[in-house]
Length: 80
Ligand SMILES: [Zn+2]
Image 1 (cartoon, rainbow, N blue to C red):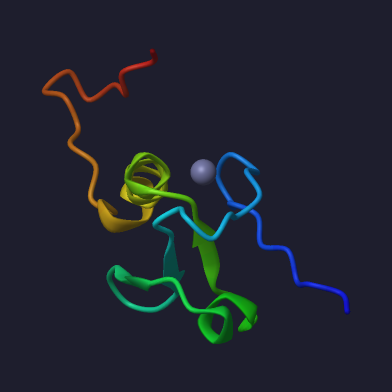
Image 2: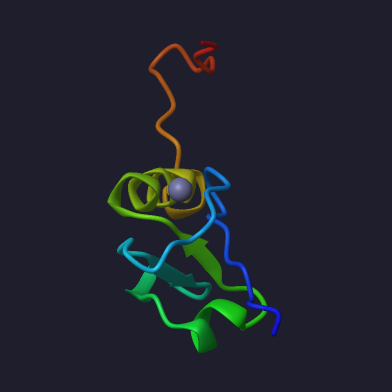
């Protein structure tokens, strides 16, 4: 029987039973639940292999969450 493989949306790691994984659910704000196959298979949800990738995922949302940018007093945008 074919076993469904789940891979981390951040680092691509294949899920093993022993790992503590999370599933992130799109929507307003940040929704993160413990891993279940049902959640992981749902379209639009992201699999995250652990706290490390969870943090990366949250950080990737920062540009969306912080829609208001601070504009320096010079009026010019800071280029990094
Ligand atoms: Zn990962």
